[in-house]
Length: 279
Image (cartoon, rainbow, N blue to C red; front, side, top):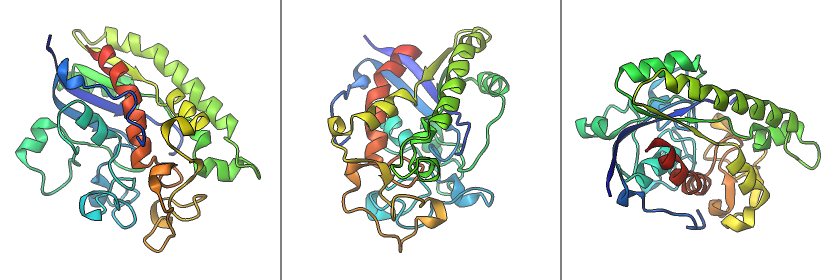
């Protein structure tokens, strides 16, 4: 039986800074039909808008994008495909979700979805944003929780001590925020008739991956691939930086953002539950 889902909004809200295994893959195209994916948020879902925004962090230089077709940096904050790409692909929409500000954008790209996200962007009160999206026609909205920010290589370096442990105080703050967010979403959804608002846990799945790296074919989860893996991000992760020999073994590409394989693993874990919530 085919269920029509129409457009899906991926809404990332992060409050601080900002698969090598095919297990769990589901052919969702057999049960759903999605016409477009639209992404809003920060650098986790920025597909290159930062290239055209003077106020954003940048990822439009090597070695960013080294594993994309042609090895060309596009402004994605990763070595290859990112979360929006894998969600769009998994939903059968298209293989790559483009940036809205891309000057080469085609009409067909707009019809099937784009990312409006911008690296380094802040966040606004979500109730107002939901109403704006709803009034524009959005009926399926996925809200991603904050990640375990204390387990990023950046925060391990700053606050994790000599053993570079996760910064638990930061994780506790993210967990508290996620709890409040999850409690508020049903109230917000009740004000949006004929809509579905899904909470996507971006915290616990990453913790599980970090605690069980070998299960997913990973070897390094406490350092990033770029440079020393301790401090490099944005302008510090440059073409002259030494990069790891095999980025498919690293959960993080730079000291904040997931690698392509990390994004793939997370999406494979999350997509079936997301669709259940939105149908």
